[in-house]
Length: 171
View 1 (cartoon, rainbow, N blue to C red):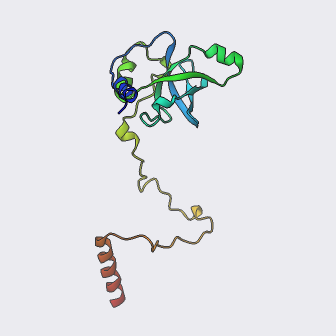
View 2 (view 1 turned 90 degrees about the vertical axis):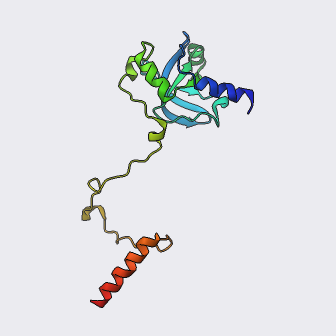
View 3 (view 1 turned 90 degrees about the horizontal axis):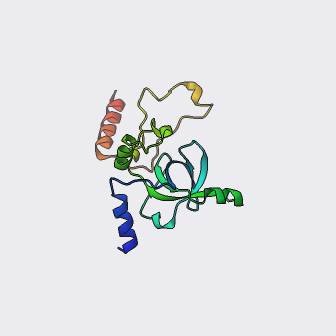
C-alpha cells in the first residue's frame, strides 16, 4: 500500500481533530459525478465542492454524509464565475460525528440530523404486510403476474408444493 493511501486511512481513523479557520462542516446533498458533490454548509446555502481524487477508491460518501470542506478561495471562485467553491478535506465517520455533535464546533443547522452507522445504512427497508396495498385499483387493468419459471425454488418449498398439488388432484 503506498504511503499516501496509508496516511489517508490513518487520518480518517483519528477521533479528535480541530477545525481550522478556513474549514467548516457541510452535509452532502447530492452527488453530481466527475468528483463533484453538492453540499449544504452551516448557513444553509447549497454549493458545489470538489471531491479530490485521493479519496477515490478509499472513501465513499453518499447523500446525508458529513464532510469537512476548505473554502479558502470561495469568494474568488464566485467572482470568476466558477460553480465549484470549495474542496473536501476530510470525510467524517459515525464516531467522529457523534463526538463533534457534543462539541461547540458542530453547526446548529445540523443538530437534528442523526448519523447513520455504516452497517445499518446499507440495509434496504423491507415493506411489511401492512404497507402493501392489495386493492384492485392498483392493477390498472393489467393481467395478474405469472410465476417466474427461470427462478430456482429452494428444495423445501419445492417438496411442499408437489405434495400440496398431489393432494388437490386426489380430491
